[in-house]
Amino acid sequence: MASITDNFTINPEIHSNGYNLQAYIDGTIVCPLQTLHDPTIESSSTSITNPGFRRWFWQDNLLLHAILASVFEPILPLIATSSTARDAWLKTQRLFANQSQTRVMQLKEELTLIQ
Image (tube, rainbow, N blue to C red; front, side):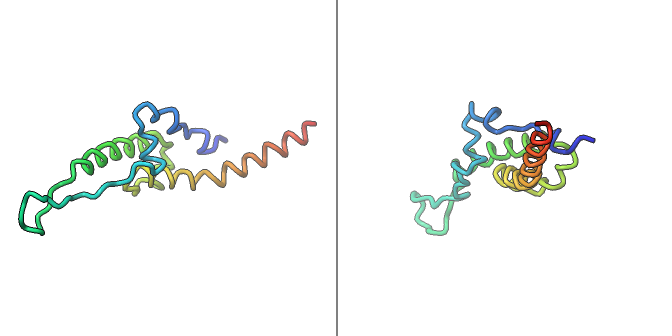
């Protein structure tokens, strides 16, 4: 019987390096402030939308949806509540970390028995 990890194929290094999207996943690019104070307006309570936030939000949202669309269906409910691409990636890593370590130990044992 195939495990869920057999169908998990997304690799951020392969799919995202060309556009520096890896930085959204690894935390290098962090979410900027959503609003900024407008120094041209006298009122100190006036703020404007940060254009950097909009760009970050659009890019991160596209990457988040790519991750969600790339995972095997049983995994989707486990990461669907993620609010950022980084959050989805970290949840996915945690889900598979223990399985990967267990699989490595299993393979080592099988190799030992072959010899």
